[in-house]
Length: 378
Image 1: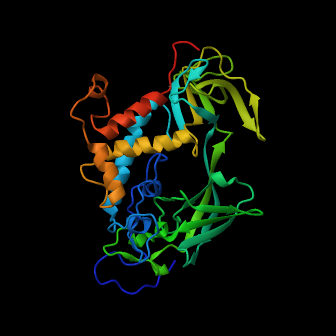
Image 2 (image 1 turned 90 degrees about the vertical axis):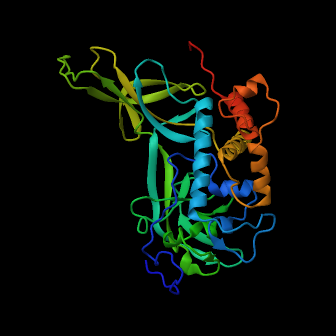
């Protein structure tokens, strides 16, 4: 792809040669950066380094953020999410998990709130899908033929043709998505579509110059693969007559959720063909020693509880920040309250694992109230 722009005098990478430097979360974030801006009433254009002469009504007009500031905020949000999930024992945003554990039947997965079994499946719906920009309002629109996929399964990414090593996902939080007869249209704020050459730009990006923004993106469907559920492992490789060797024997398995809330799953030797699982004969000279489980677990988006989870993550993240996330009045007020430590603390407050500040305490109380409890027996 060729981009024609006016030569830049004051630094910044030349068009087409810059690298996308924004950190990409290893896990699906409970709070995306766009969601943080929305909740904290931060003007998104300035947050993504874009100079918008006409900021949105109801948002604080802040200074232009740079890449380091965005990455620092992302770090604190991720750290807060990980700490809360260690208490709740399930993801705050549903994600796919693969783990190998010692075998027992039924097996209790590491995570509670198991939603479905199967591995994460990523399918390219449309590569290099063209973007069209509408000046008023400032959206980039992309229309995709998506008759085979639900709207919730679709995700947008920087095109692999521009970022071959790592495809950052484009945040679609709080945007309009229209579905028609076999098509889906996304209306994406242009500030979220900055070209990778300008993600770490020294100067504010001109809002109305399309040359600084993407003109294509990749559309993928993220779904659950029912054909890849589990694997049973025996400590020695066995033949049909149980003549065992010194390597391991594996057998694919179908999984069944016996208790979604606590994550109880059974695994049965089986093979998958033509969309159906079929019982299989495996080496039965002894019980499997290990089982690999593939499943999706966590909280589904959109409920009241997930909104509470987002606030808990933000408050705990604020408590970790040595400085306010920005100069915006609303966000600074939240941060000031969250880092404050009362003069008098209760015994429970003194034993809070997250810290003594207001933000840490409120996040810990929420995590404790939402934690998954498992008894000694099923």
